[in-house]
Length: 156
View 1 (cartoon, rainbow, N blue to C red):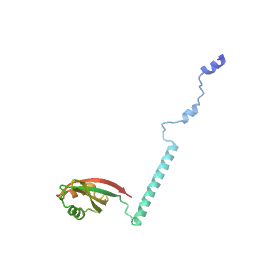
View 2: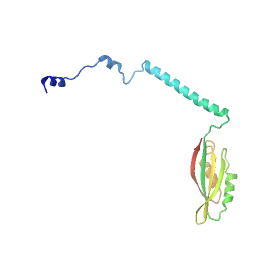
View 3: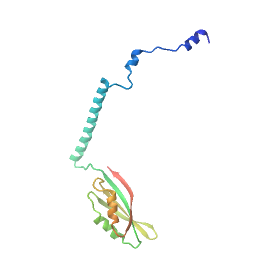
View 4: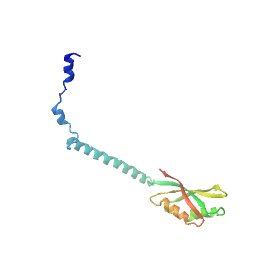
């Protein structure tokens, strides 16, 4: 390396613009740009909320219910193999009644050793009745040993 190259390497570059540093404000003091940005953000938020409300109003006007629905499948197990499961099914469909609860198909599935369980499907709105209330109401029957929630799925 020649002496001239060493001078180039050893000399630090100190060409900084004082103006450029003053313009760069990393933490901001709330200039005009910030106020414009906040106003734009508020405007877009209000537009988005208005669109959501318009969609919900259109659904209500069309007669559609906008509330959430849930499809649940319950497994009901008896104490003994001799238990009359048709009686339990009748009890469930007639006695376990809540607002928005609609019972679907109830079928019998074998567990083992001659014991069968009831698999009952229903649709309900969780804001009007919840799954715990349904389970407790089913367990009120004397011949029901346990009730398990096999699945819960939100419906659109």
